[in-house]
Length: 328
Image (cartoon, rainbow, N blue to C red; front, side, top):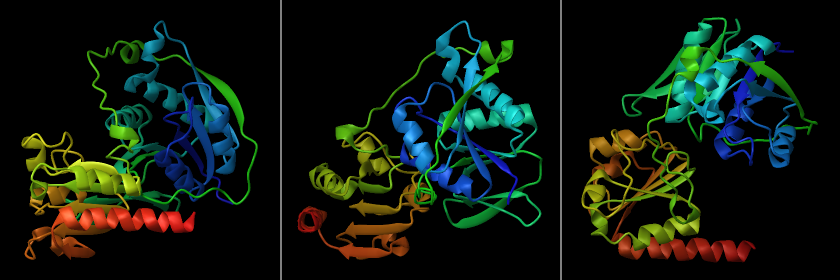
């Protein structure tokens, strides 16, 4: 039996776990014995999910803080994780991949002397026990493997790296507290401002979504067909940079925008400039819809549809809804 201990930071323990957290729990089981770390009391829903995913122990940080608002600041979270590594004798720490968790991971790696891999798309182990993080580089054109040779490995894992899979046997999950006293440097950090961008119409977050539908200049400013198809699929919605600059939408996919790696990416009316491709080229399946048969996005597409998106997308949305009704 593998004696490696893997800690997984729970992003939303007080409500229920989102798909990215369930994905890293799935990956963690392949590395060793999994324990979860929470900064607040897990809800009954979260405990039920953890039991389904084979997690028997949750370590809940008992933070000695003057200001409760400090609890979620990256240096404080990293201090809690560093203490959890010490208490659990952990070998690996896995986190979901966001701007905040990447900062947490960097602080944690510095504090523990751990090797750090950011934005892994897969995690495995070598025969001699080292953890290996798979990454894509240069806008998804290269695939690399990063072997961590330090005693502790810290990795952030991109959404949609694996399909979440419950364990074969459900277990009972126990919660145990552990004291954490962050040092003055960690608690000295102050948040000056925080911008929250809520998802539109209950759609999933663009950076984490398993399915993304994006529109470009070919929409001529009418995102109705894009939104309709996204609603039929339960997908997130994005745009090309040009479409955002025109004021037609508010989030663009690209090297300087949001990077996505969904299981399905549909680009409608998007030419596929290098900037855009750099933000979505790691998608598992790419579908492009464009009335230009020479559209560059076709070059990396698994399925290419030559046609007017105003005709193609509504037909696709109608077919998807009909199929779901037939299967209901």
